[in-house]
Length: 277
Length: 309
Image 1 (cartoon, helix red, strand yellow):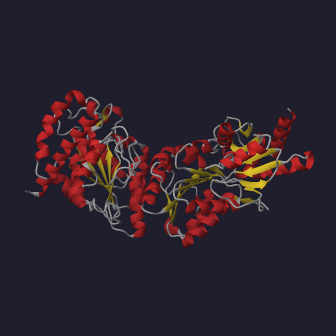
Image 2: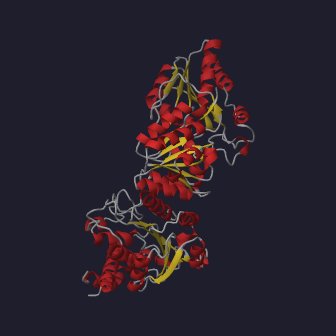
Image 3: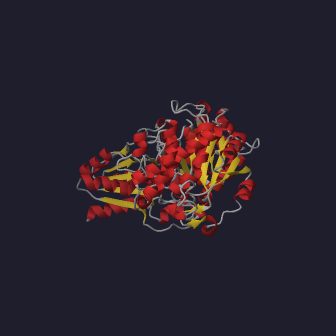
């Protein structure tokens, strides 16, 4: 089996886990988890130096999920990678669980930063990358942001500081699914052209198809794109990708309505649980 | 001989930075005001200008702390307590990271820069954040001991420096986190101060004894969180009432913290001297402190009035 086919199967298996976990808890953010899951899978299974048996290994690559509400996505990948158990995943958002809506570095194995309030993760990533430069360490830091999240001013402060300090060991990814909670980003608070903005802040930018595993892997492998500059990948994606009735619909930013649609959703991902991974 | 707390801090952290390579200073474009510039000159590879972008500065400090560094974040009090408050709480305090916020020009010490640069709310805000230690030095000896204690302590610390020149009080016990510093004993009333109100408290305590024969116990509480509950309860039991004095709103700061302890434990009164819940004005720190009644005369007047009732 070709490498990318295997990766795609893993990503689709993660889609099954996202839906299964969402149905079990009745709550979560499926739209943005499904749009980012292919990139997340590629990072954890192809690109990053990361091992669940050595979670504190000093030379590991660091990943920060700045769009922390998409915990369904990251937790599914962390389960597949061996950081969290099936039982942990099953406890998602239930009373007394360590696994809430947003990501918690203290309570969730494999999570590097407590995110959920948008706009914080890139600053944390700058700190990690800066520490690597100070100590002359080789690890890379990846930060996944939402596109709506790019409305937060603190993202731009972080972007400015990353290029100021020439952090070419920092790779940002924007999950460009064009939708936020209340509608299309361009209707709510227009952020285009994202590419122009990031470039003008001194980042080296590539645009990819966020659901084409070859595109994703090739781009991530090329990073850093330039020496002395941080890299930014704009991942063009579809919110809710993989569940036909969720795709491109802001109403599936949050998954509160899942009960009514559980059977329908499960029918679309059931086959993925049987994929060879 | 007057001295300046932020200058004392600047010199001391630069000295410590020589031996401790994990100390990193982050600065929000106010290096000559916060006095992080002294460290910058001596250890330029561990001082990072973050520009006028405090929210990012706090997030970067969080990232550095995750990698084993001891970041000291330097800017004015108002910008940490309010501008970057959410990052302080969520990126630093929630994961209990080892970041030290050393804020300068607290209270009214930004003087005629005016209310936008004064900070009269920060003790209330910072002490309501879990995992946060809140320390307010009153002289250079205190800030040095506070820095030492903060480095030993694993977790976030908020250190509230004044920019105002003050008289040091040499003859007092060493600072300890969670402990009051008993500067003078007395069994009639208790004066509890924090930061640079310590000197006003001392003046008042001496005059009350010399002119009125009143024994005013003076407790400096540079450690507001954790607070020395035992010392407060003892004061409530052993003296007639407590007067708190702070360069801060009377709502939610030192006075609020002391009142919380007394209200659960005893039969006593807490009178709070501070800024009476209004925005401040324009003038030198000395002028503003006097205008707000943050003087030894006001402390004496308050005590005499209460004793005569």
